[in-house]
Length: 296
Figure 1 (cartoon, rainbow, N blue to C red):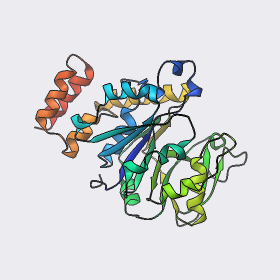
Figure 2 (figure 1 turned 60 degrees about the vertical axis):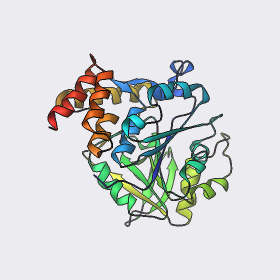
Figure 3 (figure 1 turned 180 degrees about the vertical axis):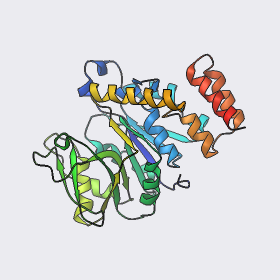
Figure 4 (figure 1 turned 90 degrees about the vertical axis):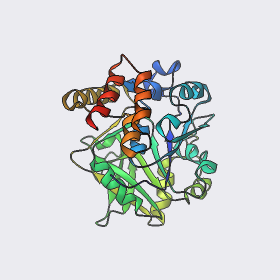
């Protein structure tokens, strides 16, 4: 695992969730139960395992109360969670821009709230990405159906030559995931973008600005890693079944903020006991007690 990152994190958890209608009429999709825990726990834990303690969640105004009830300000996990409201779904780049005051002079990691990552190899790539102070690093995952994704074409040094959105004739099988490392120039770059035909500030346009300056690199997530974009009913089910299978076979939870905080040393045993006590009589609470037993 890498050392504690100096970056700040932003989780993009807004949008209308149109691909999951009618379920999203009444609730933010990132609060849906993905197998045994709210979906937002997974990207949150990913950032925490990467050493990020300062995290902004960009979401809808109608969801703020629910997030506050579920996550609060993050102090129970030894982290700092703040919230920003995206009034209209104007794109990922627009959501990033809302975090400018929160980020200050830091570099940032962006993760989409419906993206699920699993596997230690991710954090080896994370550490490599953290070694670059300038430019951007994105992550790509090999898929069998590249025509459904944004696809990257890279040179021998790992720099991105081109990004094609849902190409009919893909130049590679590597799909862009919802995990992005950006330097602090990202905000000025976003302000120079034009709105797309969808009236959004597109993350692809942002990435293209880095490509133009030869400052966009890609890390390929290889075998032994899992990635899900849980934004459709099928992918939501696939992610849920994967999590159930791994957890039942290994006895280890995926997406557990309490465990991430404890293993990072951000909370102590006494704090874990208090958190477990609030979850008594649930499998989740039992798991927190087991963490303490296995780390005596």
